[in-house]
Image: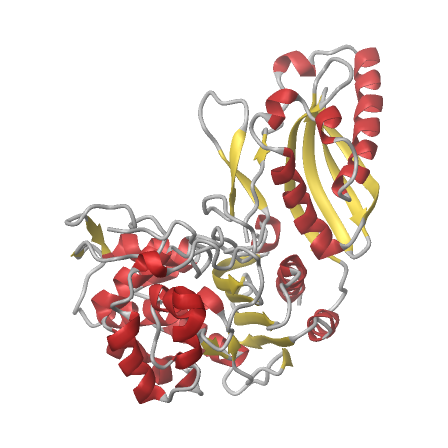
Length: 485
């Protein structure tokens, strides 16, 4: 089975995000001094939704030895922490001397380019770091800090060596907040982004209620891997009807798959529907997605489009697999894709059968998407923010009880927003999508007071790569503000 190793969020040649935003949490390994970070629970990728962050952070916690230090030493350590926190500001802004600031054991786990790429995602979202706003020691040589940026704040933890020059041995970014004070301010900031944007925040369990806030809510836009929600909906329909069960085994047939967990698995490997759905949604695994699509059938997934509320279905017909899309954009310099864009539905289906399906996976160039430039955004999955809100509402209503409730659990594995924001909700379900020039974040939110909401934001720009962190921050801020309503 051949693998596209260049896999990205839905696409093969970028390392896969964001999937989600880049609020970081450690994936602990016993006995290791550093923890490999994951992006919202998924393996490190080029943060988008999702692009991917690559960083190694040491969890910082007080030890008995540190706690027993005498007051004089504690005062000295506090001064050291104050100084080292201040030293972070130029580093956060892309300057400073990384080898001088970070201990060799830290840099052995994360390279300077990886570290700088991670920090650049924050400045992309919040502007320049201005000052350390708060500092709270949590151990003799570790502290919590809040950094004020032009457009918000960053919270972090850090730890330094006990001995001079007190290089950093741990750094963990724990959350961000943009500065918008209302949903209307968030909407205005999204509207101001270059290119085309769409946004909706709406109450789902109040019949005929108008959106709380919206920007072009009915305009279809490219949504990247958010299309996988429709595949999940068809799976839910079949499971709720008793036709399929979560533990049904699917045997890999050895056919070509895009990058993902199953791309390297041998013919005859067995995966359950639960395994496939979990990977498709929580880490946006492309191989799992294509296996599920082929198992369920393109025709049945397309038949779900009007059922789940996609009003203009032309942007999802024919319903492409991720591998179909990679071939259209990459094979023969994109000539298949150029032909696709000139055809009607019937012609596109013929092209898929006669030219796209037979095209070898090796014909997809290794450099596809590596330049981070938008590539034929007309070849995508299209839906409006209001469409995606209706899809989430359909999933909400059809996963309340019975076997289908497992899908709601799966939707909640990767909340797509930072943990401190998600904690303001009783439940957060999420799916996003991205490729160069495309970013979508769609959330299903259950308020602690009982109400259900959908929040969806999409940004397209066919002319330039996106400052993805900006939309990620704005959607996260909208989720926080909506929880406080």
